[in-house]
Amino acid sequence: MNSRRINPFGDDDEELDFSGAWGASNKNASPSDILKDTLKKEAVIKDIVASQGDLKTLLARVKSVQAEVDKLQSGNATLQLYIENLTKQVAKS
Image (tube, rainbow, N blue to C red; front, side, top):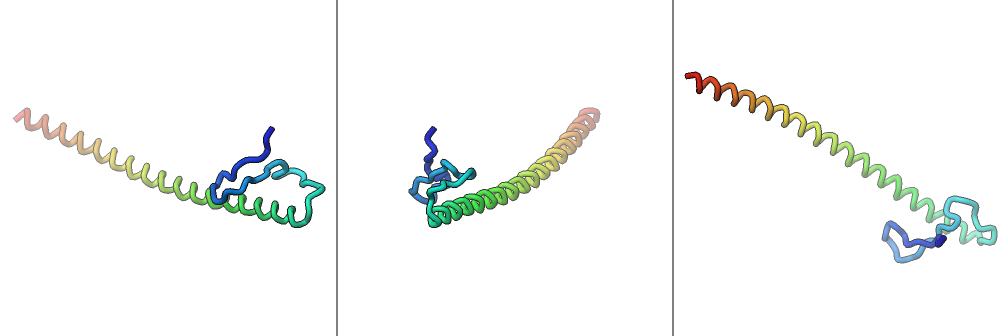
């Protein structure tokens, strides 16, 4: 299985190595490599948290718009009933 993938965030052209991404670290890695890996992981986590915040904001907006749509549909149903009643009254006259 190929463990090297292109960065899904597209913010750089560097290939990232996910072979030990969240598992055991490479025992032969230098402290510098370990630090780089840790910083990359922290950046990914920050991106995920930011994306979750964006999704929560979008979900709140969707719920707000859905509530507005429901209110408008209810109002339209009431108006439609009113128009039907007026039409019936005019037809009786």
